[in-house]
Length: 424
Image (tube, rainbow, N blue to C red):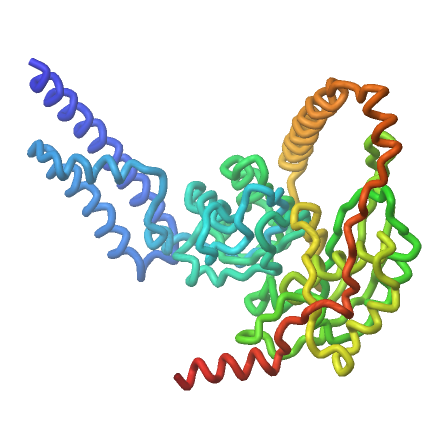
């Protein structure tokens, strides 16, 4: 009896799925009839739709194997080649994300999730992606690492368009911001879009990038940190302020155009939140986090501001002293500068974006309030224990000066080691 019921249920499901596929086929056929650019791809689309129908019809035989294949086809996603007959447009998207739960931006990373993988899932889900990733001429401005956030990341690629010809006012175009933000997770949002010329590349067309590093200013000498940070301005060899990639990077000279330390509009009790703002044409791997790490040593009084001059003099210090980078969570890619790019966002999409970000801020304030309540609930220190602690001399952790620490291999030593491996 149970088997008979299952067989009837399967037949009903197959009939319903067949009707759905036929409806989709009719929809695609009507779109193809009204589109001028489908002649070359007409056969490919028809074959794809026919194969889907054929798979559904074969499932009537009751084969368990084929039924499982059909179930898999119901998983969200689609063959991007089917979309090749659609009109497309080369656009840039401005993206923000909170990077704490991601293993970096680039989808090439071995771990998942990444921001890039989530963006392409949304593009496929919304049927905006035309062709595969390579065919879309995809490029990104910055490849932020694990835990790093962004407010002004920029990517560029071909997306499906409602317009057969370019229109200056973009009237009738797809609202890319609204469509994508509905499909993206809460910690990723598109801020705006802009049509770009065919020669545009989000990485190589960028004129400058600005990073913020947030930190609490308690017990730090901010004047010494700012004085030392200004020494970064200009073009220097930053090999002592980065994680060296001797295989792919051969020039470690980069130009920093501005440096500043400014207070933020956030306080926790009596502790003020500050931001280190660094702007430059391009940055090396982990460069900002290494620069900030040395600035913190100066702010804590462990190092003199003159240590910046010494580390920038690669003739004098050809090998980077060993030191830990600053944590990744407070680092934010604030903005990417391009010539002639004006990102747009409809008023409805902007309002929805503001509401979403306000809700996210409230959620994080609630979490902070819970931790604050937990802090207030901690048992008070007993008077006897307090007096005992006051009478005890706590040993300070010893600091080894940077110039006295072991060093990492120089660029030349790394290259020689790589060449030896290749010969072997």
